Amino acid sequence: MKVILLVIDTLRADHLGCYGYHRDTSPFIDKISEEGVLFEYAYPTDVPTQPSFTSMFTGLRGIETGIVSHSRSEVLSEEIPCFPEILSRNGIVTAAVSTLYMMRRWFARGFQYYMNPVAGVRRRLQQVDAEEINSMAFKWLRENYRKDFFLFIHYWDPHSLYLPPEPYRRLFYDGDECDPENHSLDVLKSQPIWPFTKGHLDAIKKGITDIEYVIAQYDGEIRYSDDNVRNLVWLLEELGIYDETALIITSDHGESLGEHGFYFDHCEVYETTIRVPLIMRYPPMIPKRKRFEGLVHSTISLMPTILDLFEIEPPGQLEGKNLVDLANGDEEPYDVIYVNQGLWTAKRAIRTEKWKLIKTIDKAFWETPEIELYDMKEDPEETKNLASEMPEIVDKLELRIERWKRKKLGKRIDPLELIASIGLPSRRWVEMAAKREGMMERYEEWRARIDRAERGRFV
Image (cartoon, rainbow, N blue to C red):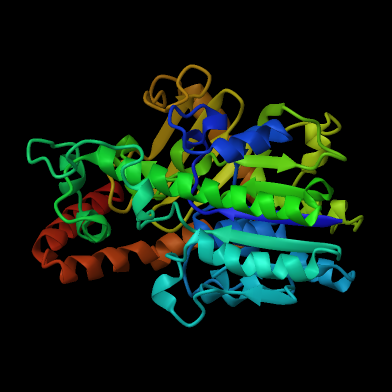
């Protein structure tokens, strides 16, 4: 048995052709989806990167592990196993090509081989290129393809900074990105987050005024990633192991590109950030051209799926569902999804087939409502907040969240509320950026306004 888990960081589902995108960003991933199962509505339990990957490797939610943010106050207990450890104990060769362990050491747990093409260069942790990742993965595959193995491959390319190789930069754009008459980024420039985001945009090109150019760079990164997925599959075919390898493609989270007033990051729990691609190809067990339309928790379903592929009994406390069983109709989809955001904001979402409720604990830099309710059947882009019009639905979903929290937490403190009380890590990042950009006066004015508003809530 051979399994490859390919995670393309920061890849929102609706920017892939197979999920309905209008640009040709993903021709090869689209082809893979036709040869297996595509899960239409897949969601991590936690975003962004560190809590999402922790959920992937442990099969547990952040509310269970305590990892809901990017804070050094959070540490994964040694008592919680990561599934590569279980594979290794059962004689499976495990390998990873990733930079994640430079963030937190537990991401290397259980891997006999851990390869990092930018080891020791921390500034490139999130800026490593897919070709560099592939170069190490390909060498390892050529040396080990005759064995049973689990291989984790992690592309970072769609993550900011959006700097695809030169041939991809004009692939989806032919305008003037610095047109002084273009004001599509004016809302962003009025936000307190601007000093931080300005640094990212300036790294792409100074003087950008057109949001469509920025989106085109993000899409160019996706196309570049897709070309490298193609090269990976070509190698598997060359080695004669493609059809005997279970290939799973997913992401840790998506990306907001101006929707809801959030720009070029993954700061909330709207669909742009929490709906991710999830595709699986394995001809011996997965039907072709299958589109699974039910709700799925992507991150916590990977551990039970991969362990079962190796005929290893998953730990009994796991909540995730087996993706193979879901694809074959032997398992029911989730009736409800819960997602936490604990880095840029502190938010929790509950989603059913029809309704989605968002509760904000700490709105940080954005003026968002404390409660949002959306009809996902009629309004999938979440444009009309129905919370004030449908209080009975709000009450029902809030009660469901509270019961779920009590069941998961027992007497423990909610880690999402804890990180909000300690202080979200993103506040320090933005303050540092404001100092660097000479915008501290503006930042302090904003902080004073927010502090007054927060105090007013409790008077």
